[in-house]
Image (cartoon, rainbow, N blue to C red):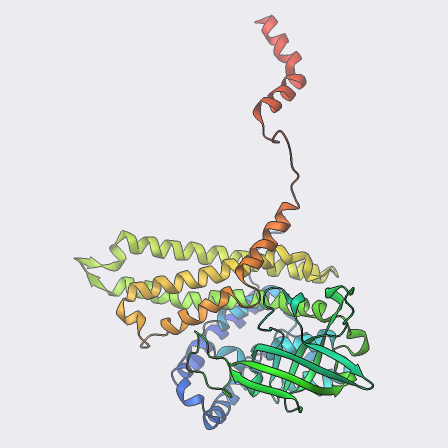
Length: 444
């Protein structure tokens, strides 16, 4: 039996340091978010956080998602998941730890599929936070079904010419490079899963027209050019060198395969960050239950509130175990030289279940605080608005539920009568044991 729910003492010490560091050094910075929105504010944020980043590097925790040869920790998905559970408590923490989206995913993408020249030119500057990046895939007419993407790149000698319409290209308006998913095989008979490629496009390339950052429920007052935006972009006769296709010539047609390598671990990290965020909401829920007095007793004595607390705890623990199990399976697959696609069932489950738990725990925390929970005096209202997006990005819940159902149904076959049909089973049992029963009847 190899079951083990323990974390080795050396790594647990790292996690303990992270918990203290995030609460002591990063939580206070959240209250200064309005000051950090302007260009001058972003410069101040960089100055304030530089020594914090150095502390992270001194602990060997910088860009932990990458292998050691690229400056990361080589921790594997389970350890990364435990780390992201802590970092998820604050939206500012990932950048201070060198693994903020989309830069971390793009750096990992280039590390997995990029040429050596691409790693030097773009991956290393991303890791050093000298440049910012964007992953430009989603289109207004193609969300849950990526085979409907229409943005295309046509080769013209030593260049690609890109035309198309994207939106929800995160961080595009503050990025230096865009990694654009494009259709490079326009043959009608081509398999859609071999028809797409990724191309690196410098954001200042002529023809890259960033129309706007789309305001969202999470950030309704977001202005174009602020970090964290989701841009709408028109690519109009954008010309880039042929060698900008991720992976070089060998990367042509590998867009979806590369995307899966990027998205698989990313979904584990999302789910663990959601657990960190829901833990923060759960702490506020329990604190309020012990503090607020009404109708003759504190809220903690009310059975309805006890139900909320128990349900929230059970939901979170289930989500946590499901997520760590998925991470464990991914680590095992990696060790065996397999692919993360063999863990798609586990990955799909945590995506929709984790999103639901995040929403429900925050919702209960707001409810127990009443009017206070609805105000900006607590972080709950912002957490609630942001949580709604979790059921949409990286594929809507419904798509992941379909994946889970299809994977599970592969384990079954139709049967008439049912495999558990009692008369049929009784007839089989009588045929198997009838002689014994008859003998006992004769001798009784």
